[in-house]
Image (cartoon, rainbow, N blue to C red; front, top):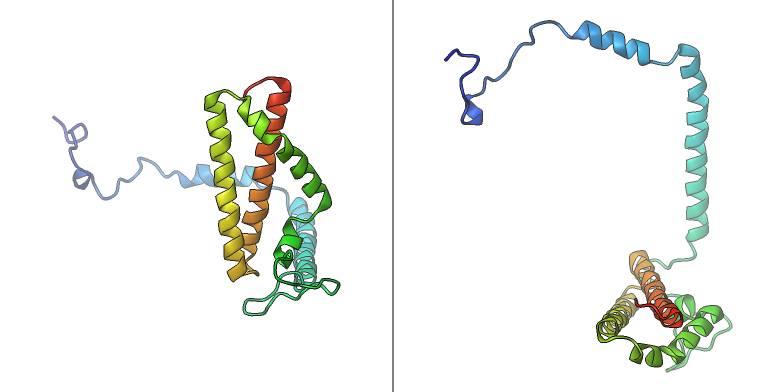
Length: 185
C-alpha cells in the first residue's frame, strides 16, 4: 500500500497539515473582487446605515423614556391608582393591570358559562385533554400571580402571565368553536 492510500483508524494518525497542490488565493481574490459592489454603491450605503443607527438609538431612548414610569423599580412598592381605594378582598393593582379589561371579562365569562356543558358533550379523550390543559393553565396563573406578588416589577413574569391568560382564552375559544361545529379538538 502506498502512503497516500493507507487506512486511518484514529484522528491522531492524520497529518497536522496538508499543503494544497497549487496556490488557491489568486482565484479566491478574483472572485471576491468580482462580487464586490462598485465604490459609488458602497458610498451611498454609508449614510443609510448611519441614519438607521440613529433611528434605532432614538427609538430606544424614546422607549426608555416612556417605559420608565410604567414598571416599578425593584424594592419600590407599586403606586396605587389615585382613584382606587384598596381594601382587603378588593382587586389588586395586578388584577387591574392584567385582567380587568371589560371586553376580556365579558368574553371569558361568556365562554365559561357553557364550558362544563361543552366539556361533558366531548368524547372522553378530548375531555381529558381539555380538562388537563385548563388545570395546567390555572396552576400556571396561580404560580405567576404569586411570584409577581413577590416581585411585581419582573417584566418576564408579567409577560408570562399575559401569555397564560391568552393561552386560557385560546383553549376556551377552541372548546367553544369545536363543540359548535361538531368537530373534535
